Length: 441
Image (cartoon, rainbow, N blue to C red; front, side, top):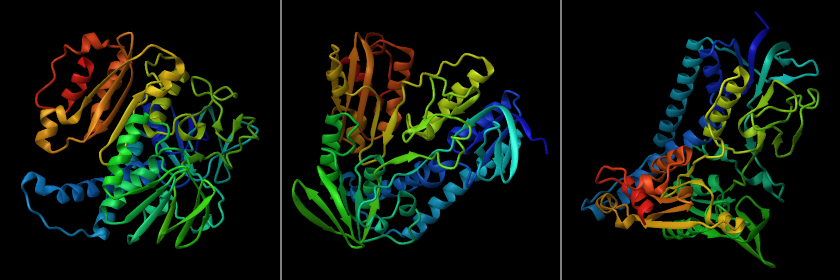
């Protein structure tokens, strides 16, 4: 086997395998090293399995509310079949990735890739070299060593349950926590979220978070904020509200406080690569302090989203080849799959207030839209933030928010002015008209 390549990629997640495919299209002899399963966290333990569960829980919710549409329906669900479907979705996508890589001619080695002081990547006791190396090792569940933390399940565990608990306490009100809460609540599990910050989803626009919190509580999810968990038993969670200790009885506890870069056992010290506990340090091209060695995706700690990892890989490949890349990694939409959905891109209103910039706010409610009314999806609103007639932030709470947000992302990437876009023709009746109306508000 030839041990010298044009490009070696350590990690077969979204950033790694898409970069491998793109590199092969450009004629680079590419080696992809993956220690476990192709697809990374996103496919195996995150985005895809949760969305498979989300689809089932969304249907359950619609059936519960079917009488509003004039339909009487009684139903029962089988969690074992829901899990079976989730597993089949994941398996099909993994098979598809493997097929694409094989067809493209990417060399794949299963094992732990580790850098050494000779600028080699060692895997399964074999050393490989390349002019360019990309680290794309992703992230792992973050754990706080609270007393009794070993009694918690992780976000990986929760997606592999064979049976549902009757009650679930979630430590952490970030994206993972609120998505799991929304899904399992519709599965009939009694859910409690305990969050240390003042609100759940503390990095999102405050108005969006407040309205979402209200909706989640209306659906039966208990949300406790400003609370510090101090002990976890098998059937109880102890937390402090101020100086007072409270207890939640629970059958299962999920620790969902976020994720941390997966950079252990990579040989970073031997390779003299700079890093901190937040991740591998990179420049604007995602190149480390060692020329020709890059780090993309969660392992650099910048933006822990699969689509950001993919975009980073495109920028890295362009940099390697000396080509231009128009991808703006400062404009990154993100979504939270709750009921209703949340989708955002750009600055929050709180960030704009702190910056002191003169901005304008437009807001339109879902209930003002004909398609939303006809579909029975009237919860939520779109908020548009602009400076000098250009979008700087869009925040959506409502049905199909994850689809609508990309209209805003395109406008921001192309720097299309509000005064120009408001005259575009939108099909009627569609939810996208809410976004159009927000440009005119």
